[in-house]
Length: 431
Image 1 (cartoon, one colour):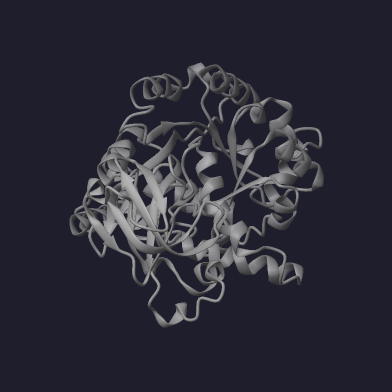
Image 2 (cartoon, helix red, strand yellow; image 1 turned 90 degrees about the vertical axis):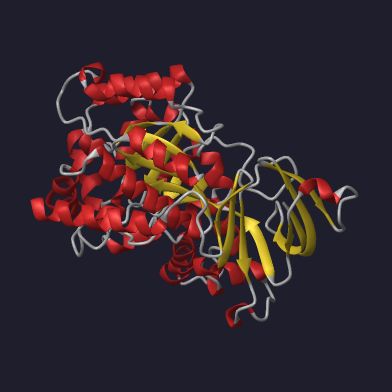
């Protein structure tokens, strides 16, 4: 595909008003002020008038099959939300339920310019099938609740993960990557955490974990572990000695931030989910001021309700200005970088997340002819504060169209919606 005279947010997220961008195979191979000399080699020409191309978004923390729980678990704090609603519902979910729910999540994300997500859940083969069919990318890990005091190898998930890494890691031309998972400090035991961290180190993989999501979680962790916070506890037992994405990190103090910064942990901020569950606000301004790795996640649809990551960017752009009484505390480029380049790096995808020659063609094209886009005095501010996900008209993942103008090449959306609605109704009836 060759994009003709299209406005872009370049590799530095600076606005360039009229560029030619060429995509061949899965990569961006040309960016210039004029048409390439051999333009015909790119095939289809996409007219760029009235459009803005930006790097596609990376969702750094998701639970894709929880589309089934959309609107089901409402108005509850985290612990009651989990124990009274989510876990009983999830116990009724079949592998096929997970497949259809993930396919719906993929369609929703592609619609809103998201091409890749880090997903913590169950039924990994079915989730892989859904992501592969939809044409997206994902870092997938099998959820682990390790309440029993026994070695990791004695949990059935240990053998499953060995198989998943052997057979699924790197599949779909590298779009599928397998991570390991520790759900959280309060749902695991020390031996399991230490053993998983060692396996991740030995295999050269990545780890995904919930950390310090609520004040209650931190207080109870300190009681269990001689005053250690979840961050201090995980650091002490080696969890942060491997590449790690720590979701939430809401209730962290300066000592915690020192550790997260020193270990290079990727912090997945989930601003909408954290507000909706009444969990609080991660200290993102402090993290950004330190140069820490901040990325953005939607969390699951039982605590966010939509996969339009642009809505998370909008909230992230506002809450810290209001809570700190400083209108300049977080700027749009920082937010966009968190949702693009840093999000890609949190998944170990080094050649992704920016509009740059040689990088993967993960692109979102927005229609900027609507009234909310005029004038485009500062386009990055328009993207975060004026536009929204519904302005996306084209999403490319590894150079392939996964959404365009109301169409999903890899997804029969009406069938998927019918399946998910029927399956949610069945599960609720069984509770």
